[in-house]
Image 1 (cartoon, rainbow, N blue to C red):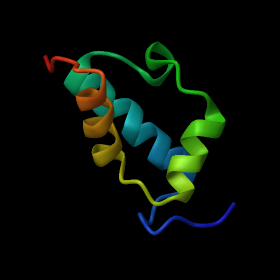
Image 2 (cartoon, helix red, strand yellow):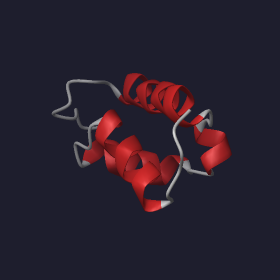
Image 3 (spheres, rainbow, N blue to C red):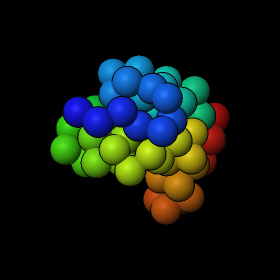
Image 4 (cartoon, rainbow, N blue to C red):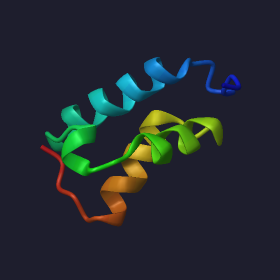
Length: 65
């Protein structure tokens, strides 16, 4: 896979997304229902983990804990 300009390997990026989801919304990637293709597309498009989690929370009107 191509390297992302976020300077993270995909596993590191995915872990950062999962950690941020858990910290803010008490959900995981599995809870959110993301598939690997969707996540790898976001990673390859250089989406920052925190920006993605913020967008997701706003889109679905999630309440932070």
